[in-house]
Image (cartoon, rainbow, N blue to C red; front, top):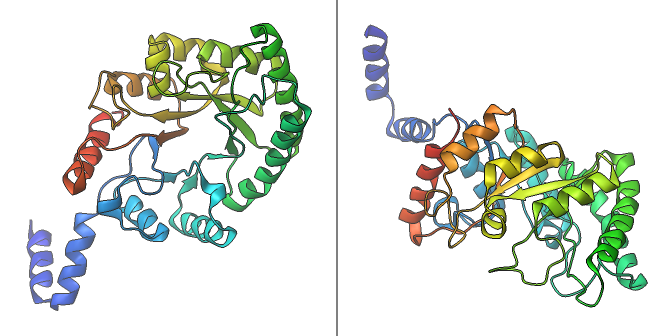
Length: 301
């Protein structure tokens, strides 16, 4: 008690500028999240500011110790370097970015030589970005399905291309993660749309460099049965992303019981990335503050 009183007296005697700085430090003196929640840029625009460095510093102050950026490769190299440098200074980790993607072409599922070579070219380029960002995770989208081609042929084509990608990533210790995307609301016609399908692909390739990205939003819509599905595919899951449904907003706004699900994951030993792949339900500062509160409420015990 005496130490507290002494500290209070010292603060009272300090200059106003010091008092303001100290108050700000107390405001942001929050413990880090246990789960490696990983925001993307511009998810909290009203609280974090517009500049990438300001957003990262703000995220650190809120307890985040990781970051991701789906469309990082669209940012200039100089900006990527600044992001990576600041994350390193703050002791934060960088997760996934997308190396190759299309939502209109049959790439992995088909046999178009030009399209498949373009995929491999983008995969090679993604290695340098991963090195720049000091990350081991690259998210590559498997493109559209071919409605004219039997499913098993499409699977064989995808396995062949995934094996070639593994050969590119293996010398660098990089892991490609592939995400199943729901057909029912967001991505009709995509080739990869269920976790069992992703699991079959990963097992067929048989490389530590080809794994699954488990996105709760997509899996809940397409399949449901989240915990048993997680358990069955566990050995091939390397990355996770979070979003509630309906609406693809922050946790606690929809039907998924993230308290139970994340505790289950944490108890199983997962300490990997959990990307914040969603919007905010309520606009403005109050909505973003509510989203932060939601993340505190679902963080494992």
